[in-house]
Length: 94
Image (cartoon, rainbow, N blue to C red; front, top):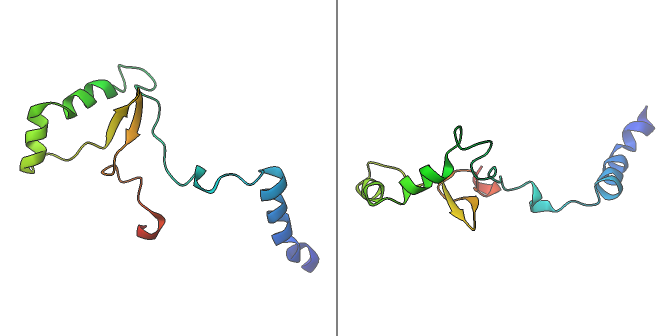
């Protein structure tokens, strides 16, 4: 029993090195948003929400403090979280 428990660190190390091939450390660190308008346009209308964020009325609400900053942006047809999303915080802040 003690030998099995003593070999556990080696088993975990072997699992990381040989089975998972040392995955990138930052691969799971940042949450990635789902695809744009996923699963369909009726349930998730990201483009309409983004157009609302870009309207002058909404920008006036944000400037006056009545609204919040947008939590995502659309860049090259992909949804990208902004710094206001609350998911990109460094590990030290958590």
